[in-house]
Length: 599
Image (tube, rainbow, N blue to C red):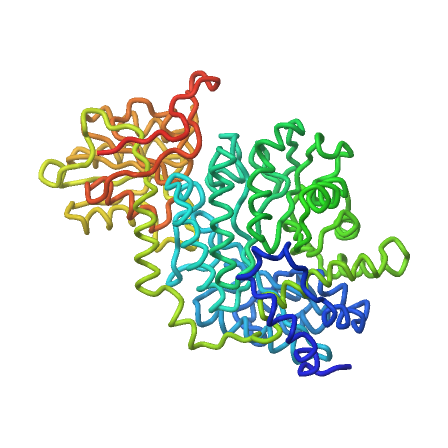
């Protein structure tokens, strides 16, 4: 078997000519894959099967995780460590999660990444591992502070700047790369046209397909200029669902014509921008495939439309194979085989790697899948690794972390961008900005949802601290997403001692106790300012609030930006990237796309 040095030498020429910064020209001149094809031809069937999988693993270290993580790995994967996972299954990719204890801090992440590469490259015919994560920013972040956290997608849509989107990708990509993460499952290219969408929502850049497309392409360019593979998701479009595919099987009822004009537009733009990978959705889309299969397992959608009609020949990765949307119709032993038959390349995070790995292996041995079919996907995966220079530069070390991650310049850029996203929807009587002389004493109440990695504490506390830094005296009182009668009474009593009240709202519905909280606070006669910390649609449920802002997320960077708007330190510049319908008549638009007030 060739040594690691032999493998590197065999692919060095390809790696040197395929830097991701050149992907915009990928369609103009196909790379010479002769070295990579030769490598594939020497791989065993087991090695090829392993390259197709991207798997979770618990622990902060590749070889010495904590005992609890060893126990979790033994229970779910049958190995003790990441190094054992690689040795047993030869996986081509590993995905990092916060809950898997992979992302404690940037230096630890870099050490884990190097440990994973060392374990893989130390094996006979060792290949570099493509390490990935979901760093969407906003409500989905796997790597937290001190890394730079940007506003989430819908906030970026409210800002509307392609330059800002490219900056986000470039900086976030540089920081991820410094930690050894070379594939980011972002940007979300779904066009969110359903206010009731429980899984996409503010993870989408908006409801206007052309605006979304421009921002997606810009973000792709930024990430890939930093040699991180961007991933447009979730093909063929997850923006009009009322079911979360983690827990159910959504159905998209768009016609083919609607799909062409709506869902397809951002994906076409991503492909034109040289997108390195595209993630499939676990949704049923009868207009594109009437078999009843999820798109992830659909040959007409993946091979017929994505590869054939859209001309995409990059890496296609499934969404997590542990999600209910892809497991509803078939068993876990059939899903990976059917996904490969549909045309995907990377099989992400199956519930049982052993079941999935052997299912693919046995399908080839039985003739259901050909080894030539596997070779197509393995070649795409190795080509991407070569583009990322993983064969030449698999390790990141520690020195680059301090140079790249959470630098003052990066943090300042995130704050500047956030300052262009906060959207003012209601300002009766010129209530905002609040005056430090008239409204010095503030009460900050509201929802404190589970914190993503982009937060340093409960949103009420972060917002109160930011307002205090701006010259107010702000007190935080968490009332939750479903405040009880006693909690509402406590907030009303506290409001008596305040000059004004700031309320953080979170997905308010017609029957939400949050409505009761806001109505009773209004009854105190104190000025009330509401800040939607997730969906901007909350404003339709709270028509009596005299001041209303949309922050689109409860991460620190967005709450600090909202505080600056409340204090008048920043003019509100964000504009709605989605329409808000009337609560009493959803067929009528209350605030259209592009709406937003200024001071």
